[in-house]
Image (spheres, one colour):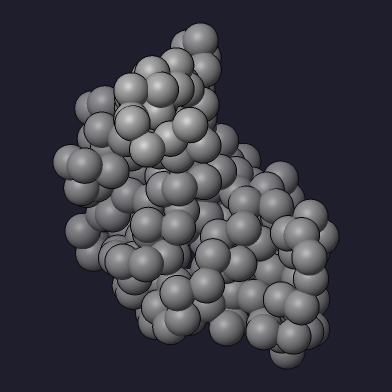
Length: 201
């Protein structure tokens, strides 16, 4: 859940149902094909998430599976989000409805773009990830809880230790992931500094 301060939005946990997309090295072109990036805003990008993979699967892709409808946590394999540095991939997934990601590993730039949107990416070791994927596919209605303070993922498969870099965890817990809000909160200090500079009139 998010804790609202005066300005900053602190994220200490995310809870919801999960959707499993198996496979390693799923790149940003598969997450959001390039032809859908010729837009001015990200508003409608969610409906094109995994568009080509979903068409190829002819309705059998996990994102089209009614069992996973309204899932808020996407569970993936190794090196998810590799490829380009475009932020459209996490934007598309967020606008599809996902609020967090659990995987074996994430491409560094993808994970960074997720952090800037307040979307936690946590990792599990291979055996725990397999257990979680199997459990969610058997019972998609179960609730999954990512606890950033405790660094755990809890589901019917049990409580598992989750990995997240210290700096990213701190940003999410303290609300400093949102650069715009941080800048706005520092507005008075910025004005004072500007007023003190002799070359700004």
